[in-house]
Image 1: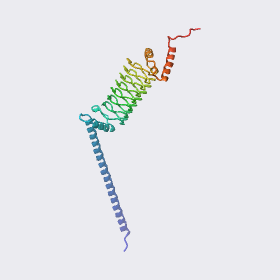
Image 2: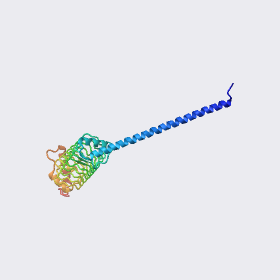
Image 3: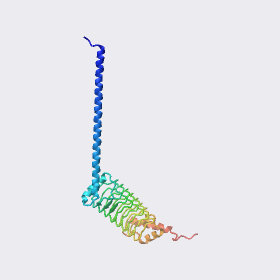
Length: 295
């Protein structure tokens, strides 16, 4: 006995209906699973973020209180710096061991480092305005292109430190040892360099206008195109430096420098020849120099 066409159609429709219901159920189940996974991931992310924030707060708390060893402080400081911390005003940053550390691009505004070891550290392109480096060792460190306005380097060791293209406006390097330091094209307006040792330093193109160089030592320094306009130069030592290649000196200052700081026999031969050429031209251009009588 055969099945009628109407019954067959009803069976097919029922089968399709069950399949549609199953697909809808599976879609809802999948959607629910996705929502659950997303919610769990969000919760996990929030928990991890909270843990990270708590860790940051704990590290900063440790840096702001006494009783923490310099080794622990160093670890906390590096952890905070690597996580982008930019608030350092209340942190106690003494005797940290940061030699060879990569801190490039870090925001260290208003931090106060004391007696810390930054030898060979990378501090390039950092924000370090109003930052203190008193008594710190920054020998061979890279501070190029960093902003260090109103920062202090009192009695700091800056031997062969790289300050190229740095902003040192109104900074203090009083009594610092900056032998062979590189200040090429550095902005050093109103800088305080009293009793600073700049022996063999490279100040090519540096702007020292308005600076205080009282009793500073610039022995054998390269001063080509450096700007000394309005600087205070009482007892400044220019021995064997090429001060005549600098800018901003008054005619009276040039006369005094010529008398006091002509190159010594210890100066390089090239520097001695350069001075002789400059002096000869200056004498030729002087209005007091002898001229041939008109015919």
